[in-house]
Length: 149
Image (cartoon, rainbow, N blue to C red; front, side, top):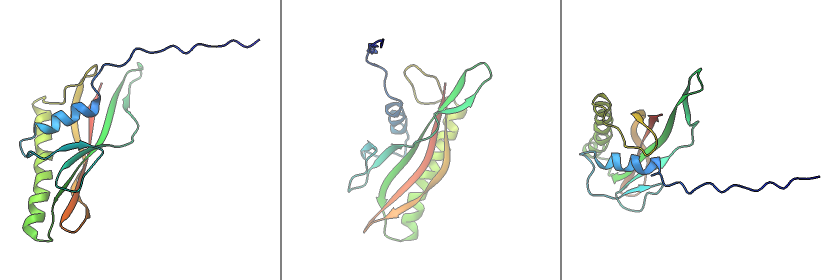
């Protein structure tokens, strides 16, 4: 005899997604201008994107069964690119300053506000670098992660 199992419908999750909290956090960076901050998308012009990166969500497991989690993401942008050293310095400087800003925020306990979780820190795993070039735009990228519980 085969028992038919009914699937229980879970209540719709009303929590704000972590990626949305990260986007709001990035918006507070003083070096961000009025360009769009997309999720998983860079258009044809100069704009930013926050792109989730597939990674093990568990950062650290504890013997009591608890754990710290991580959410890895790339901060990407399209910037003016003409091969001139001054342009490259300015573009790289943005990412260096962003990295220093996150470090200072961690020291001051300024982290993304999460629904249902407690953010611990934002770390830069890979400094910003020129990822690819087009006619007059360069795509820059930095790899980061949010540690939370």
